[in-house]
Amino acid sequence: MYYSIRHLTKFLYSNSVSESMMETRMHPRSDQNQRCLTFHLSVSPRCRVFSYRDHLANHVHHFDIPGQHGQLVIVAESLVEVQPAPLVPAFLSADAWQELDAMMEQGDYWEMLLPSEFTAPTAALEELAAKFDLRRRDDPLMVLHQLNQAMYEYFDYVPKSTKADSPIGLALGTRAGVCQDFAHIMIALVRSKLRMPCRYVSGYLYHSSSDTDRSTNSATHAWVEVLVPHLGWVGLDPTNWLVANDRHIRTAIGRDYADVPPTHGIFRGRAASELTVAVRVTPSESTPSLDQELPVPEDWSILVEKAIRLPEQAPPPTRQQQMAQQQQNKGVPLPKLTL
Image (cartoon, rainbow, N blue to C red; front, side, top):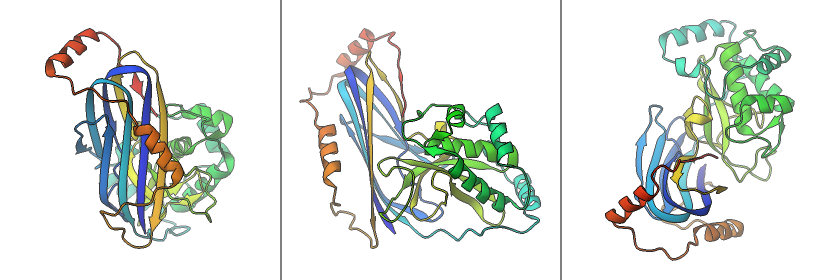
């Protein structure tokens, strides 16, 4: 299956800002059962975009926009080929726990075993683990399947009930959240109670008319991957009670959301920011022409048109003007932009 992905992010500032610095993680990975064929990142106001790969092989693009601007628009376009994932069985052999421990002794998995910023154990998490009877029993895969189902049944999916930087305690207390919260809670449970390497996956999920997913189709998605004997990293989606399949498109992996936000940056100036995000995933059975203009739904076209319609831009500032502006803004704090 081939997927064409358009991911729009727009920051609208209440007042003009003098500089924006941003990192993005929107470039789909090429590993396991997927391959990114093309990727293009458009930024308005125009600027030069640089890229590198972090220590987990995630693609990171970054840029700096000096000069006055009232909004920042980022459009990422990808073409990804996804092959059917290997079938994940319902259970493993009785000695799988011993095999898992042997794997961990031979490999370097400590990053995905220790608590991280959004996966630190809490008293509420301990209570949930007891409610789920979560412990090393049966075999690792059977316990993971049961946990995936329990998470789906215990928590309600409620958009905007939490924020990007909300701790897991909020979702645990209300029994409601979004995919990011469910991924963090499941990671914390797997690491602390099952002592299994577990990592956060950000990306996209294609929703067809026949699917019954709880997550929304106009946003990014998050799920987890757990290291399992004989199978390697197995993807589990507690938001939708799924084993990750060829509808899941992986963008980045990390310890938790803090490692892989789609956008992360700062701006210089005194202004509030309003964030708009829209995602469109379009499937195709055959390979789309790489230079073919892909169809865009009307609602998406209107959103993009409104987002990138900017007032007439002045010529780029000279180096002297940039330095003068920086001196003028010296000492102004740089608030963080978060999703």
